[in-house]
Length: 353
Image (cartoon, rainbow, N blue to C red):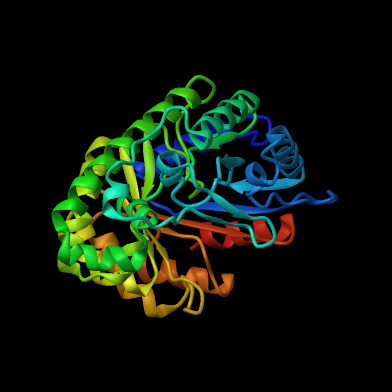
């Protein structure tokens, strides 16, 4: 791979990690290259440059040329149209805030209106997603990896159709409608993943996504951000069945556990046999992944033979403490440094634990 010279060896490390055969932590560490004029890619290029998506790829490749991808880090561009782009393939609604880099899909409607919604093959945003996926994968062949767009969680997409507050009431007053619509969304979810996979597999081996993890087979981050507002009992009824179907359908899966509000659902998630792992994201305003506050949770996850993904830290110097406390097997750590020397020093420290 042009921007990752040792890619063949790194692929083997990822494969071992997914199969839970790697005895040490998988490390994704990046920094600017020494002497390079570093430019970062902010991830929103395909919306900033919708009229000319080649510009987004130009910016991304310039970033790759000036980035040091250390240890198991690799160049990964994912087709970012915002979290839960599947909603726009039904409604055609996607609002992008160019100044704040946020995309919105929520366009609340009545149940009568919503039940008429269908996935549209000729939808502008679905056609654009396929176009930029092919454009990126073709250009990225032997140079970088292309990750699948952020399709979204089933109930999160439904929340975009209905509005979060309305949907909370619907879980009590219209449970049958919620379940029926969830099935329709799940069917579209599988179609989107399959169609995009059919595009990328022509140009690259394996799959990736917004979480930035390469896999030799089909994998995807699963999530339900909406679940922070519901009880474990409701999670078991309205979320877990669809997660189980996704886990069974995919070869590998990582659940995006987003903030303390989702921790009450952890036991349900850990009891899904086919779920491969958990990514913990503490969220803004909370202690990040290096805080000892979360160590007992990490032990619970690893004790259930699940992989553990940690990608946000208050202080990188605290990372060795995590590994001393919970071990390195099954753990993936992502971080960055200001220079190559710092990146290599960190890797050496972790490898010598």
